[in-house]
Image (cartoon, rainbow, N blue to C red):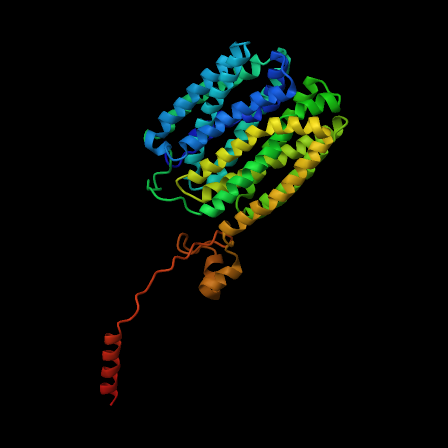
Length: 437
């Protein structure tokens, strides 16, 4: 892969993430097509996403060893075969086997994409482009699938076809490395281990809360809001369109506001939207909650992906945090179904919103701890004095020698200096006395 081209990684990201985006239509259709209860269908959806999470945990540090192109193609082939088997079979054991194998393939593709994105010069921009692409693909499918009849075959068949469409993009991946060639392949312990662990655990809970609602959103629209499947599909498509706008906004904003504010405030807004959507009794509140929620969700997710990528240039934390997210996603559908059975849709929304408010604290803390301070004019003065600030702001100043105002502040590395030799110090003192005397 060309070290400056993120396009193959964006395509691979789309193929790997699409299954989780289609979860609200895959889970109910599996339930209706195979005669399962909502909780049983949620377990099948969880099996799909557990397969995806296990792929990330298994391959987190092995992509470089086997080669990005080889691993990506294996994942895409497994996705096509697994989802194809599930789509063509009407027997529950074969459907479960197919979705688990397909989920492992999707997770493999996502692992390669996450490893490569973490090594790019601007991982946030690449992850935003990936979310933009997968949101567009999922929105198109939500508008199309309801017009071709019910059943589980169509959405699973779509998940089987997309990896085949992504396959040509793997030619742009390196045969031995998925990463930017400027990043050396080294071995060693994970950096920022405490922050990375807190981030992974928090993201797992964050994703669980999101997908607990996402897995039952179709039921909220049809059972509580009284909408038909076509109307619910339109709402989801519009919501994913809002997600497109959110990702575009996040890409335009970039790192100007840091990561802590978008992650912390965005999670609070998402919590409020989940409570509104879960309590919807009509089209207005259901559509409003879903659209606002799906607008904010990819924004915060893009910053979380960028935060994980910043912890390790080899992409190991990006893969591990992504796998933790997939694990939370996997537990989401069954968690949502169980909460609905015990507390109803509204009670489920309140529980999930409260959990997100609690999770906003450690997520923001990790972003503050690892993100550093932005290089503002005052910080320029602390580093280089007033003259440096003037030179940095002057038109026509040479680029590359002085950091721009607003750019991330560079890390200062302390260099240990050995203690002076006492004998040599005494000799210098005696010589000075002789010269002076």
